[in-house]
Image (tube, rainbow, N blue to C red; front, side, top):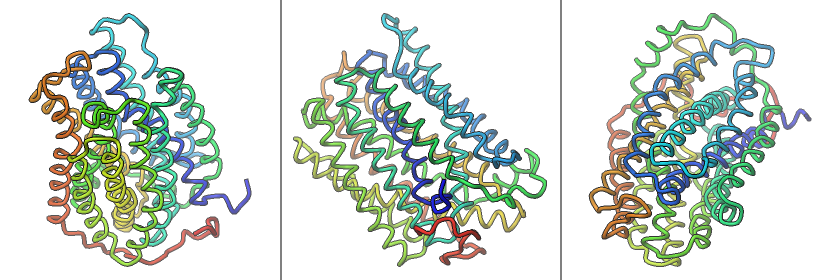
Length: 440
């Protein structure tokens, strides 16, 4: 691979694209597939998600710690990514390919097994890919620009995973859709990993033992409060994506084929808007612009309440796109500074365990989302596609607008109550020593 593409933010961003296409299709349609299409009860679906989170609480930090302690000629992160790639492809296909004729208990068992396996392999990929970002790009401005490029690739993936998916599964079925996306992932992820070169000096020194590593991580108050705040906002990302198919059917009363237009309204608008947020990042401190993005996101979900047809839904979706763009770009700057400060304190780069624990905290948003679905659904009488209850329209109006607004208010409050005072550099464009990303 040509030197100019080694550690290039564009090559690196292909990894985000690769993982987000199937991951977004999963988060947007697994509930719709199992609950609405296959008739799995909402209670069993929530139970499966809860059981997974118990498992996730154990494996997520461990994968991060093991990654930090890995020493190979390929680096710390790349061997894990190479090993997880084929397993990710297989388990993603498994999620959307249950055998026919299963009972409720059989369907629940298949769903739970597929969910646990898919999410475990996903954890390995996300932890190791995410740990590379603060190593490759230093300083608020470089991280903001690299993040903007990365999130642009992510938005294209979100658009494919959300908006194009209904067209594909309506034409080919869910199982064939999963096979196509698995191979898209494999090709793009391979190009990304072949273009990454890790810094050997970051592997130097004796890594902390498990207990010591957790003690240092658990004692970092800024890290915990930042990620708890983010987890509530992250819940909104997943909740809106997963509720849009229901919102389209019961609130906007449009067909499956028009869901693509609705999804496109959200995600196409994000692509240019991430660079608007990058411009804002150049003007403000990283923490301030992160807090601003949360406030904008909260306001942006309100128009969804007033949707009543395709046009109003599309306009509301564009408004959400602006809030979503800010939240996609800004957290990377705060995360990077937290990790830099820890490295200055301990003398070790521990991106793996920080990324893993952060991933667990934010991925716990899935439980918040599932509980919101369950509580609101039960309150309005929605059980499944076969038994939607007396007022499914209000069920999904509340879930896509009122609940996200409340969650973002909590996120804003936590962010404002946290003091972020960093001892490391703040906004300088500190390079990582090699001229390997001239695109920046």
